[in-house]
Length: 248
Image 1 (spheres, rainbow, N blue to C red):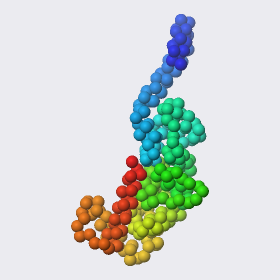
Image 2: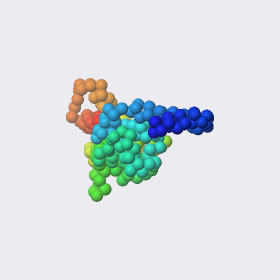
Image 3: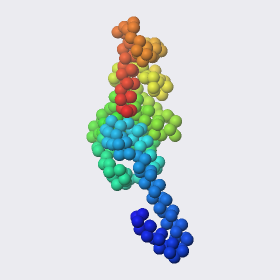
Image 4: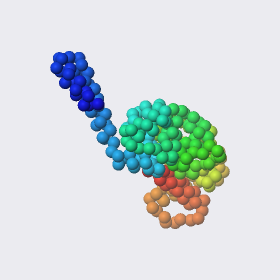
């Protein structure tokens, strides 16, 4: 393309056609800018983000914004596949393809913020577990925390506003896994809902449980007893650490 433009530029110069000369210079500059932008994203980075099944949804989203532009999620998935292949010789495998589709859906639709089923499927996709529509699979507490973090990062315009059904569903998943205390990272989001779903005996211990959790974070393991405070602190610690693993 640049070679043909050079020939056209030579001809225009001979003819002293200033309008054509200016147009060709603009085209050449545009091509050079595109080449520079493409070279800024190395194949090493592509291989460690798009070809890594464990890449977090947030990192995949940031990468696609930088490589395809901020409006890439408006494209059809076939267009995204084609551009990634042509520009970066990258083909999405099943897990990250599902993740990209989930991110694209979140960008185009608010449903996951208020529909528990949509949230469930998004949580599976964001955690590198391909969403299954034949039967219901539910995410782990760590997956839930990771998904909330990613959703807020991808859709900051929502201001962390989740619907009542999604909040209840989050609490149900936590309680089913034996967690009766809101994990610190999502405490404000679900505390009011969870308080009505657990006994007063447990909710009255939340402050003590979170204090014990902070001791574990500070690697303070002295005076540990096998009581409800310690057990709950251990469980929310496990959930928080698990969430970090999904966010690599």
